Picture 1 (cartoon, rainbow over the protein chains, first blue to last red):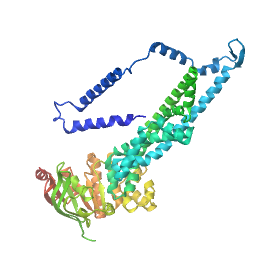
Picture 2 (cartoon, chains in turn purple, yellow):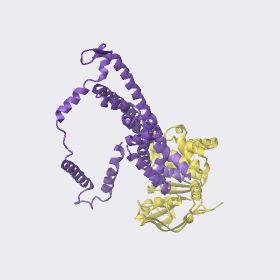
Picture 3 (spheres, rainbow over the protein chains, first blue to last red):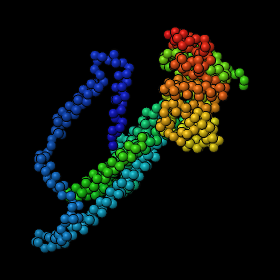
Picture 4 (spheres, rainbow over the protein chains, first blue to last red):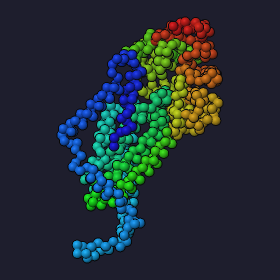
Length: 310
Length: 248
């Protein structure tokens, strides 16, 4: 998961500072923004040119036909067979002998129930993982917030831990954890928790750093202890933001955990890899639809809750 | 404890990096005096108040507040004890917005209640009674359960005064307490401040922007210019325009 919240901020602040402090001195020189745009443009050109030179930008031999084939294969999601399937589908061998008779409607009903169970597992993995991540992120985020002045070594340690956890993808954590705690949901939960505690901790630290310092100073001015300053001045102000961030990361994790099953860490991903390796495109279409519906509905839910929070 | 000097500064210097905020400030403020500190922006008014409560480091000279020498004060515990003795009302209504008015007032009692229970906003019942009384005294009893970010500017400033009142300190610092208020609310806040200072016989040191307020707020006025004291006279001794002339 990347950081859509954090990335835009430093640039914006930087520009503001430039604009406030020395508008005159900068006249005639290129602004930070134009330099940045030129730099980004060069980076894009460089990437395209070098990848092209390495012959990595080809679209394959028949991209258009392949695309049409894929679309056609996915156009018949398997769940439709629950209503329109053949109740007396006969599987024959080459000589025309009937090997077995299959009720497609019943088969797909069973498969759909399996998809439901996998969705439920995925949801639980994401939820427990996020809850665990919040618990881990809380102390680390507090230590990593510059304005709380934690002891230097602890500050750097927390920062390093958060950066490390954030930079390793959930799926990679999943690979390791399946080896450590075995196949199943536990590995998934721990993978989600480890990765997103890095994200949450950083978000929390930034939220604390961007708090209005004056009310906090006012609490300090009453002669309150460090702990009182935190609990009476900082925590009440930062709590709604933290809750909102936890919801936001939860939303992300629901998306992330749908593929955790690919490495054996439980949930929907197992069905995904099964459908892909058996070339069951109809079932793959069903799974993708299920994922889209779950993810969008939880996105909407979390967004609605978050809007009411702050 | 009678007639203890509230503030005694000798050759006080306060820096911010290379910049000198206060230079060569020597003055004496007796207990019970009401002081107005005036000067242009950047003259060092707020820096002086911040130095008094240990938020600015003393870089030269000595600064003695309520019998504690701040210039040699290093321990956090000592600093907290001193801050407990100095109540503050700031410009800009610095309350914790998401807390109720009562919870904000209770924070004033933080220095005398170190228990961890205060971390979860559990205060001893007599503290709650005192805080409610303080709110009622400033006429904000009705707002005890209201979140302070739902109150108006004047109402919030009254809650801030209640917090200072609840702190029950012998010295009150006020930094432009009426800065963001309309005339009516400002009047009310000033009257309240003066009544409380008279009741408690506390020392008041107040940064004032509106020079017409000086005679109402203070019996002595200290004029700062570029970090130095340029006048220190009775409040009635100079008119607002004379003060303006000295500030330039």
